[in-house]
Amino acid sequence: MDAFTKLTGVVAPIDRINIDTDQIIPAVYLKSIERTGFEDALFSSWRYNFDGSDNPEFVLNKPAYKKANVLVVGPNFGCGSSREHAPWALRDYGIKCIISTSFADIFYNNCFKNGVLPLVLPPEQVKEIMEKAESDPGIELSIDLVGQRVWDESEEISIAFEIDAARKDALVNGLDDIGQTLRMVADIGDYEAKHGL
Image (cartoon, rainbow, N blue to C red; front, side):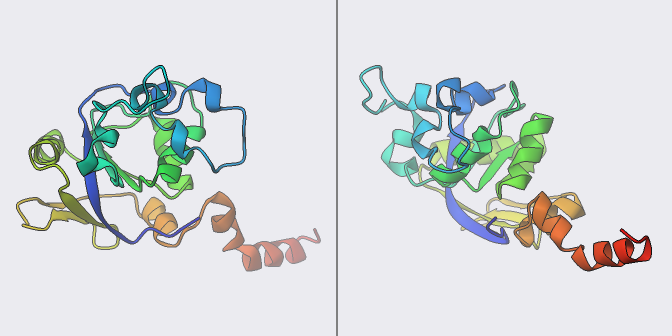
């Protein structure tokens, strides 16, 4: 898993509540468990017309937002089924950080396990970022996970945030669950030797 320490990128606003995992990646794309290759599936029912052409009204198809790697979204993002394909699709598209007031628990956990930062901020701060991203298309935010701060180039937006220390450590060091376990391989070996395992 790639480490996440600091990111500067374009913010795309999706001002909808309760965006579920089937909207993030429809079930038709769940046939593969390869963990990669899902970038075209991301928001496909919104991104594409019935004939397969791009829907010009969808935010990620608009020129200013096409290269976005930060999303700002409404509350309860990632609700619905527990499919890990949702953070895979976001990551494969290039989304490295999602900013919201709240996330569904399983989706939130899956993001950390796949190198995507789900950043929880208070409603007034999410609203400020949403409004700025809508009124100034192409605006970039910087997210410093180590320093726990979000800001824009003008510093009109400057936000300190809290995050669980263990989750932060895992992302900063690029460790999924297996990587975190392997960190303790010496301790595991000592325990096994001590107990004759």
